[in-house]
Length: 323
Image 1 (cartoon, rainbow, N blue to C red):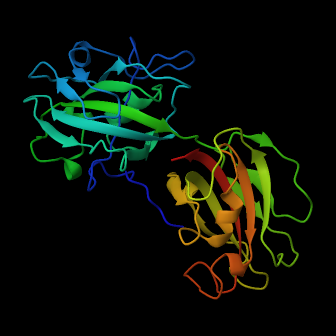
Image 2 (image 1 turned 120 degrees about the vertical axis):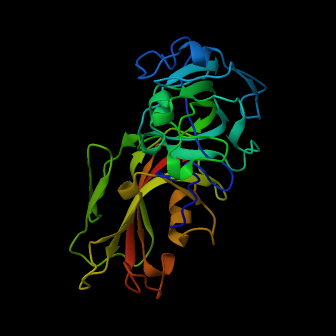
Image 3 (image 1 turned 30 degrees about the vertical axis):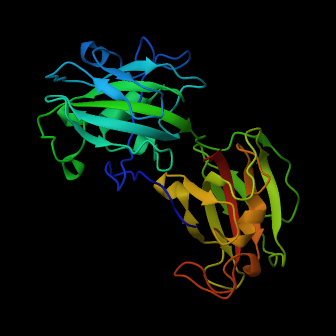
């Protein structure tokens, strides 16, 4: 599985910036049914940013600014359900030295390389707090104290350990934390799947010989956008080896749930495992798919450190979004 995550859990700076933050109108993220951990203050209310959401803003604010706790104000209101710490989001962001007003880090704002990350994994602790209860389409002004801003290992030139940070964040999109479709009745003879409290699947294989052809079944059927061939699907997955008589039989060879970070998969032959292209094409966001891939639809005679040659692979895939 090829990962194309653009903001790693321990990183803030990429080749082209990928970071994020959020809040909400009049209350720094106060959306019905969600109580934000961070609210607005004098510093965040002083920030202005003109231009369309998703395009590079023209930002101004009073200087010097120093805060002891995060503040967040909404500059442009969003829509939809409030976001949780377990969701991955896609953003554009600009960071400024709050002491001098100088820009220190910025997205390219082309839409081709947004900053994507799970809110709860971001190492900028002030951003984690500011993003909870935000909404897609929002533009947020966030002011962070030095202790909750960019960690020393990732701190860009032009920002010192004693400087507060102003960030303007545009939330382009958000993805499900887990499949939320309607549960389906499963047929007999298929691997059994039990979900943990967070949605993590546990897979138990039958004692039977695996099927010789590709088999696909829906554990849940979603109602979101349809994933077509050539589209990029945002997924969470677990994969298990089904090879009776081999020591690897029943072992998990890979799982995005281990890192807590979803994966972008291009649903196109040559871009991902062949059987997954067939399994995912035509599915809807919110679905959970069980896919049994015979060797000819997986890695064939190739082997890896976790997958023996000529193995049947069993995937459970949550379709979280369409990138």
